[in-house]
Length: 481
Ligand SMILES: Cc1ncc(COP(=O)(O)O)c(C=O)c1O
Image 1 (tube, rainbow, N blue to C red):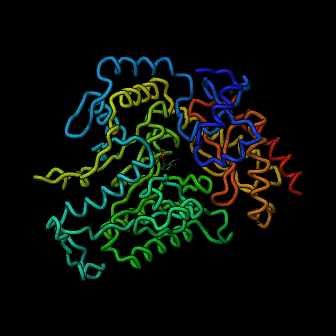
Image 2: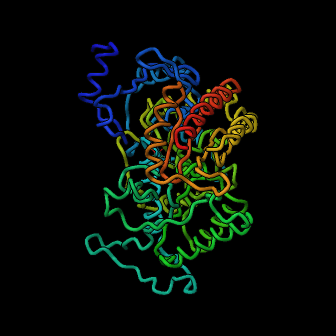
Image 3: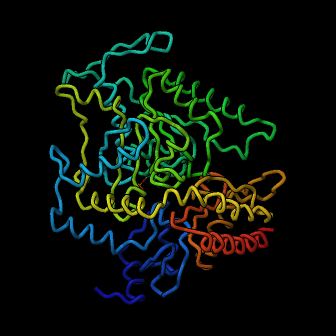
């Protein structure tokens, strides 16, 4: 295969279909081609270096410098057993990784079902919740909680009860993946719309974006508002039909919405009251991003299901996992009961070997502790950006932040759609890349810059991020005024 930069450009234009990419934009512009990485840095086909302040896609938690060691683990596994399946069989790496993940996950999240990525994890969580209520059978909600017409409809084809609890609740603007089930859970209208009608039935409630709430509202009042809305939504949908509440510990899309005090405890309580499974989407927050192995531990969420992917292998492999509590697993241990779901590559031995090595490296290098120790320094540096007129808010936790851009700081006025187009797509994304900084200018909600570097980043990288981002934002402000 030819590998000159010019050849790669041509081949990319002729054959590669990039994800979520306006391909027409590359008719005249160069396709950015990244050829190697080390630590927190990447290099493109022209030899230019970039600081990757997005860790790939919020996912290369150990950075790019462990390819040698992880490669050896992968090679060893290739020699021993390049593939075997988790369909009715087990193999040592899947067993070891399941045990390892269970030991890191909080509480009795003890059962691990492997998939190939985040969308599949979310998809699998919803299917699991649907089937859990079927498998569990029997127990019904008391009539005062909507269980009155708890008639079980039966599927004549197989003589089995039809799922009654099948609906899900998620939050507005939240991203949960692209396969049809996961997409349906997604709360971003623009990426849902082309594929409608979607999988029934999901409703979306408010996310925890506090920046645009009334200024006089206290944190307690905000929490109350969110929980009341969630409860009203459950009641409107019919609690006896809802099987899943699916949310991220800290919501990424829209810009790092952290939960107000008491929020997660309230969500847990509502899920218990209405007999609904709570699923924590930890595809980003899992494996250290918030300074804990799982964000659920950070916020004491006590989910019934955890979805994980990206950081599980630091994205050195295509692997994800759904982790379930003993309670969720229990009905599937009964007699002939079976979770009717499987994916060829779920628990692929080479992917598992890579994930195991990733976790070993994270432990050995003290990466999760490092995030906890350095998060305040990082936040402090990012908050220097608040001095710029275009920066309205800096929010997040761990190594997971968003900088919200505003037109008028006092009024917290956001940019119009047209301004976002000119500002984010027309200028910022290109200018940041030009300046050698990879982070994401995102307007799935209000316009934000998302910053989520590898978890091995330290003060030199924090400084580089703030310096480069600051320069580009200053120039953006000059252009927009
Ligand atoms: C919170 C969350 N859930 C699910 C997904 C989907 O993961 P994947 O792209 O691996 O399918 C993502 C991807 O960014 C995500 O951020």
